Image (cartoon, each protein chain N blue to C red):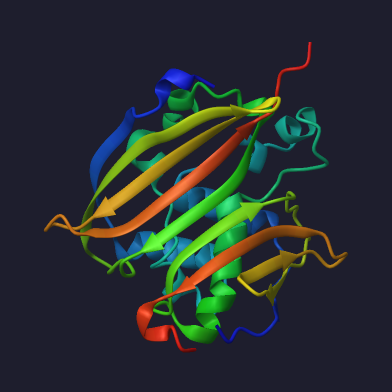
Length: 130
Length: 118
């Protein structure tokens, strides 16, 4: 991973939380409570900047990468039909032992600038074997 | 938080594909069997956020979507198609286990203020 990526903004855009989008997520969960859960757990970092936003932004080798952790801080659930502003940034890149860690944060705010939700994703890149 | 143990339906390839489409995450380790095997895995794996979403869904089913202020999840093992996940309460939140007892994720939960006394 690129330790110089810390603090970099990878993508920033307005995103419409359409009922269709939430329905697709709910459909993937496949449960009766799925429609309510979908308002909490959308992950649109890839949607905003393209599929390779995070991978390229961190300079990550996918073949050695794992998802190590996720964090959600909710101010409220998403409301179907609302438009939010999404900013995806590299919060941290560091080395611990033989592995590298990259933390991506996606912050969603509403039209008035109030934060709706903050998501963090921690990737672990295992050391390359020669 | 008053959460009772719940078991999810087995994770399926269709479910993983649907999730990939829902969040636009087509990382080949989730959708390309040959890529996954070349990476040393027995098959494709579920997206970590899908595993956590299923775990949180078990909580939402019991307490509703407004009950939570935050969730901090640590993923510890991959989830494969066919895995049946059980969500069990812990002191700090929930734990997600496979049928063989393997812990795939631990999730610390903070209740929303209104649900604090729950």
